[in-house]
Length: 164
Image (cartoon, rainbow, N blue to C red; front, side, top):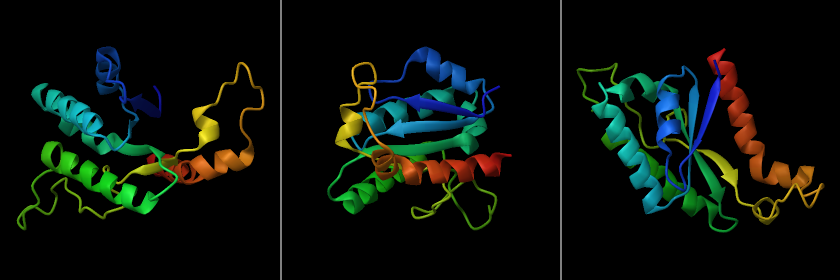
């Protein structure tokens, strides 16, 4: 029974992976880049989950989006667009309509950092793009790891502690 499930659909989600995570009771990390094909793939997935006896309502509290490969330049602008696109998708496909008479609605504001659509960041770094552990045993160093993944890891530790 895993605590965390990683799902990367940059090249399209595999049927088996999509089915497996619906049977697990773990945190599901949805890795994404800010591209139309990524958002469309997740839209298809969420719509499929809704068709399967509203499976999305069982899963949505365990989903967290990850912004992977955040570019080295214009990061703030990229993250603003990424967050807006993630929120649009989640608002349209898995969040409830927030109405004054329904305070328990599963709905989040665009800028709510605890929301499933609020991305965990992984920053692009050339050393990671070219990482080849078979040919280069020392492919990247601690500074590279910190530069690209420290914020992601810190937030993951917090999420794991919340789950315990």
